[in-house]
Length: 319
Picture 1 (cartoon, rainbow, N blue to C red):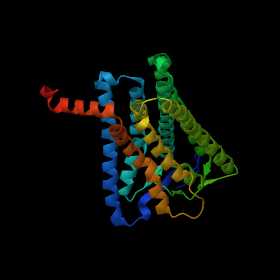
Picture 2: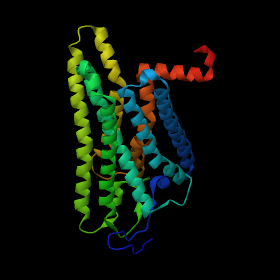
Picture 3: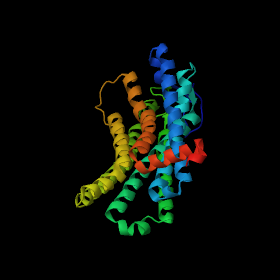
């Protein structure tokens, strides 16, 4: 649908999210049920982590403060994407307005990049805890931790605003079919027209690569120092204990950047829409689903606290 919206606005007033409409119709209810269960588990898992950290005073430490912030960003990230995906799976009316599309892009990028910045800060927290334990309380003071979390949200919001503004400043002349299940940059740029499109594509790509690569490199640098410090610990038990405090964070980092690299660094060439759609599910639905599982199972202290909290709710007299 075309409309005249002014000089700086798109001539397209709504888009059509193709998404899973290219799959056989009999598979859509199965996809809906699977993604719904994963979405509910993601919400419940992250809420349980937040509730456990809030109720257990022993977990009122910087590491778990960052974990709560990470769970919050994950809940909001999935909220920006998954409900719309679920609705479109059961609907034949897959149109999304220009404003709703821009809003979805802004919030998904904001919370997605906030997630990456928080993972980077958690890596720094582990670096300070293992490499500079005597200065930990000074370097990771409550005020300092709050500032780091705040700057992560500010950084995510600025990145989301820059990307969304750049993309939706373009003119979309039609067609209006987005070959994706969400308002994502590459399929939207294919619908844009004008001489600014290549410049915007390169600029947005540069911003995203610099932010994500910067986070990844800083995390790798933190773990390089962490591994070097752990290897100098004389006892095997001490090395195991030190590394176990990093295991859950490191696993989530590997999953997060692993799936992202599979999607964004895949070889360019002819790709089927169905394959691209399923690959995009890995970082929009699967990664948030796995994150609370990894933190719950790989972090012994959190797992013990969650079990204790759960049993206290069920059997108050037994704790």
